Image 1 (tube, one colour):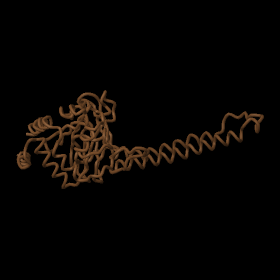
Image 2: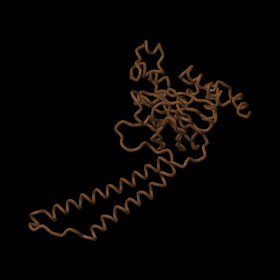
Image 3: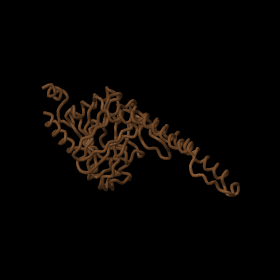
Length: 309
């Protein structure tokens, strides 16, 4: 039955790219949180424990390297002033200084142990996959993503708004050019619930997950190596053909989050964005019921009865 649902979902996806199951979320007024901002520096807001860990580790290392840089700069300045040729016409002839040699050996060891003691637990938390509340298999393709909600028997494809596969003949006759922002493409973004600012970020269908739940993404690829990443979640995982890797996250705030394929994968690599919408549990259940019917081709009641069998 699961294979039947998956096949039906694939056929439904091919029949129509715009998904009315997504439309209900576009009018919910979700805040765009995880997105690049022109002129800004630093990380996107951390909305998961994993992302906050990365921010804290980055801050710790920044403090350490700043102290080291200031110390070395001051030491160089002191040496220039204290030991220049004018003040020392007769150069010293010693070749060893045991206390200094011990200090510059022990000091870096202590620093590296400190960094390792802080960073290794963070790495382990990323790699130890907890039990999933929602499991989603993501397949990277040239140049779009396929998402399968494995517990619910449906899947869909996700293209960048403006990708060749999303254009209709009417839009092309009106002057739309694939992967180029023009009046027709801008209107297409608006019709999908996005703005001009989301160009190159927004997709025709988004991954939808409930807030505060453990989401496990099973990542692979169909052709070449891709990488699935959402900066605000602090996750990134290569999708390698023939291999299945996993990542997990638990988003703490409702909103819209963007990512990009982060492994050079060919000519249209730059046009392979990721859109994730984190919603309330009630909104997620509403979307899930609509998605089951659209992508699996079965009404919700029939889907439930089939799963019970």
